[in-house]
Length: 404
Length: 102
Length: 124
Image (cartoon, rainbow over all chains, first blue to last red):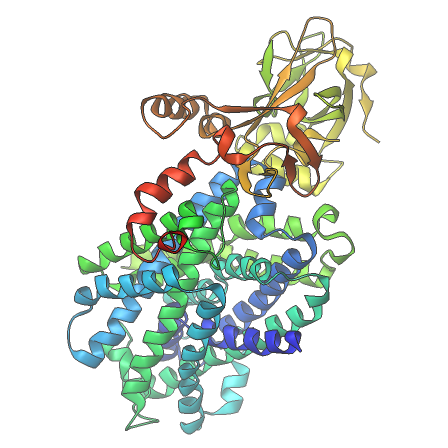
C-alpha cells in the first residue's frame, strides 16, 4: 500500500516538478522560431533524463548512498571538489532564473516589476525550506505544479498537425539560422537533463528510506513521470509554434511568452500561464536549493535532512539560507531572468560530462551496486546523449556569443 | 616520522635507476586494535595518463575504468618501498622484479 | 583492507550514530626499518584543502588559527577508537567531545537559532 502511494506521489512529483522556467522558455523560443523542428531535442533530453533518474534512485536504494556520497568516496576529495564547483555554480544560476520566473509570474498578474518581488519571493522559498518537511515540499509543490497541464490542454485545443509534429521527433537541419538552431537544441537538452534533479532525487530516495524492493517502483516513477513531464515540454513547444510562429513573434521577453495560451484559451490562458510559471518555478527553486545544500552537506559529511529542525543540522540550513538570499541579489538589480535561464541551460549542457561521467562510472561499480549494475542500454543511451550535448554545446555556444 | 597518506597518493615512485615507475594509488593494510599495518603499496603505471596533465580529473576516472591496457597496477611490498623522503618515494628493488596485481 | 577504497573520504559516525564528517586524511608512522603503521584518522578543513594544493592548505590552516570556533588544529583520532569499517566508519567516541561538531554548534548557536522557527525553542 505504501508503495502504491509512493508511486502516485512520485509521478506527481515528476509531472509537477518537470516544467520550470528553463524548459518553458527554451521550448517556447524553439517553437516560435523553428516550429516543430526541435521536438527531437525534447525527446532526446527526456529519454536521457528517464535513465538518469532511474539510475539515481537505484543507486540510493541499493548502496544507501546518494550520488554525492558515492562521488566523494569513490573519486576522492580533489575530484569531488571540481565537480562541486562546476555543478554548484550552474545550479546557482538556475536558482536565480527560477526565482526570476516566480517574480515574472507575479509581475504579469500585478503589473509590478519583478525586481520588487525578488526579496519577498526568495523569503517565501526560504520559509518553506525552513519550516517544511521533505514530504511537504515534494508533494505540495508538485500538486500545485499540476496547473502546468494547461499547456497540454492548450496544445490539444489548437489542433496541431500531428504528422508534422511526429516527423520532427527525428532530427533535421533547419532552413533558417543554423547557429541559433544548434544553440536552442543545446539549451533544450540542458533544460531537460538537469543534474540537480538527479541529486535531489537520490537524496529523496535516502530520505524516504528506499531499499531494493523499491527498484521496480523507481523504474515506473522515472519512466512514467519523466515521460509526462517531457510531454508537457513538447506541449509548450507546440503551443508556441502555433501561436507565435505564424505571427513571427520571437519569445525574447516574458510578457510575450505570457500570451502563449491566450489563443487556445482566451479567457483563462493568461492567468493559467502566470500561475503555471509561479508554481512550477517555485517547486524548481525549492529543488535546486535543496540540491545545492545536499551537495555540500553530503560531500563534507554534515548532518542533513529536510525532515529535522534547522537547529539540528545548522550547516545544511546555513547553506540553503545563504544561497537563496544570494540568488535574490542579481534579480534586485534587474538582471534579465530570461537571459540567465537560456545561458544556464546551455552551460548545463556544456558541463554535463562533469556530472555524468563519474555518475556513470559509479553505476557500473560492483562495490556500490553489486548485481544491480547498469546494463549496456543505460550506459549507451546516457553516453550518447551526453556526448551529443557536449559537442553541440562546444560548437554552438561560441557561435551564439559571436552572433550576438 | 609521520606521513600523511592522502598526500602520498599520486606521488611518483622511482626505481633504483631513478626512472619513474608509476604513482601510488592505494595501500593494502592489515587491521589490528591500535593501528593498521601497511602490507603493500599499489602503484599505478600509465604512460598515456602521465601525459595528460589534468590528473585530478583523469586519473580517478581511468582507475575506475579498470582499463588494464591503459593502467598497469603493481603490488609493492612495504619492505621494497623507501619512504625516507615522502615526497619522493623510491623502490628498493629493480623494476623487473615488480609484481602485477592479480 | 584497502585504505583509499575503504577508509579515506568515508563518513564517520560516533558512539551515538551522530555524523562526524568524513575522513580527511590518515597519519602513517614510518620508520627506517619497521613496518609502516597507520595510527590516526585526521579530520579538519586544512587537511582537506592540503589535498587540493599545499598553498590552499597552508592558507586554510593559517586562517583557522586566527579565527574559528573550538580547536585550532586538525583533529587526530587514534585508530584504537575505530570500531567498525563498513559502509561508514564507526568510532568509539562522542562527536562533541573531540571537536568534530565545533562549526555545527557555532553556526547553530550564533546564526541558526537566532532565526525564529529553527526548532531550538521547543527544547526549552
